[in-house]
Length: 180
Image 1 (cartoon, rainbow, N blue to C red):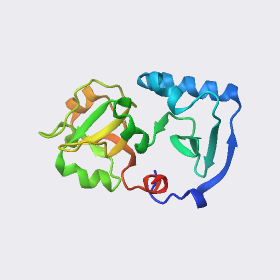
Image 2: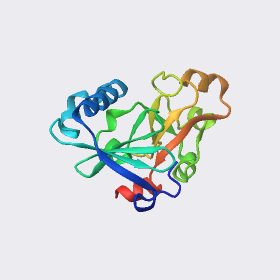
Image 3: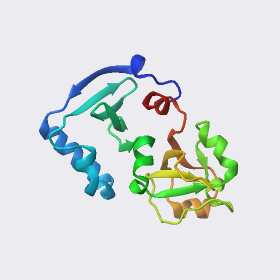
C-alpha cells in the first residue's frame, strides 16, 4: 500500500474535524479495537483536535498533535500505524511467521498460508476473515507488519494454500519512513 508514499507529494489536504465527527471516529476505533478504550483518552484527548489528512488514492490519516495514529483506505477499517502498535503491542491480535518469511514480509509481500502454519509460525487465537492483525516474527520482540486476514485462521490451517494475510503496512515502507 505504501510503496512510494510521501506526505509532501501524496497529500490532497487536511481538515480539523468537528467534535461530533471526532466522537463518531473515537466510537468506531473503540468498536474496532476494544483494548484501546482505557488509553484512548491519552492518545486522543477529547479537547485536542483530530486532524483528518486526506491523501491521494483514497487514503486518509488521523493525526493528533502532529502525530499520525491511524490510517484508512476508502471507508475500510482504521489501521493503527506501526509506531502506535509498537507503543501498545496488545492493540491487535498476533500471528507469527517463521524466520524464513521475515525478508519477504519486510519487502511488502503478502503472507502465504504455509508461512503461517510452518514449524516456527503461530496462530494461537481463532480469528475471522478480514481481522486486522499484528504480524510478528519468530524470535523477534516487536511487530514487523500490520496485516488483514484474507481467510479465517481455521481456513488457513485447513486449506494451507494461497495468500492468508495481506501485508498492509510494514517496517521500512514509505509510511514508516515518513513517520520516523
